[in-house]
Length: 82
Image (cartoon, rainbow, N blue to C red; front, side):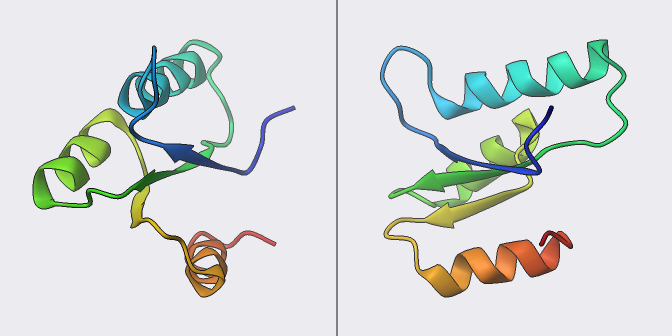
């Protein structure tokens, strides 16, 4: 069972969100997943370079911390999630 959406901190110790996202996308390709999991990066540094790198590794969206509840609602609406 796959989640519909993953909110992932970009700057984590040991393995960052960029590497984790790339691994999830690779697994989806290997498994020929019917539905791609929506991955939203969370960061305090949402500058252009971070946003670009997030997209390059397969994140669907990038939110700047602190996260507002209305941002989560907009993400759900944007990607058609319940």
